[in-house]
Length: 253
Ligand code: LIP
Image (cartoon, rainbow, N blue to C red):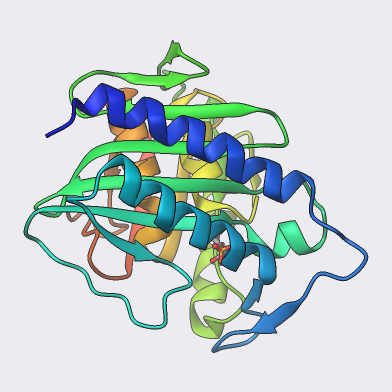
């Protein structure tokens, strides 16, 4: 097998190319399709980036299978290597040119995170982690904060297409707001996880999230010294939707 450091380096180069696709999008006529559920969108650029990622990742590490958000069918496996990919995390932000979107590539082995790379092209920020080797932002090591809940910035997510969970997410946000410094809702789970890993935020939660949103970010937070579980405190699974609660390991309600 190719050295994991070499694989991560080549993924970074590929994500930079994909970031250019996002930054150079022809915004005069972005084709947008609706997916299942309320306000759940996919653009031609999500699809373009995913196609480029699938081809590029196969050239980088052909032994790994590929699971992409925009696939018609998602086939997860707990055996062997797999790339779990969100071609544009923060699609609604991308549509609005809100400049808070990223590309997320997680590499798992037998269902457990082995490497993660997340690229924010708007800030030219490349987050990465390899299991057991720390977490990095633009090749500089990062670490979670040591802030307690009273000094915490809390970021959270929800999806307009999970009506029942939106209320729960905002109720949880309000409960945190009564204890922490402030709350934020970015629209990108992967960037929320990167914020916790870099110490820019201290807690991130979301009542229901997909594996491709978090496959890279979970490892980046853990390698930065943070803690990631479901909201209920169980282990995160990367082969089905689940809730998520990521923190610096110090701040909690
Ligand atoms: C997004 C997530 C975000 C969630 C949004 C959406 P997408 O992923 O990253 O945390 O709150 O509703 O699901 O769909 O932009 O790739």
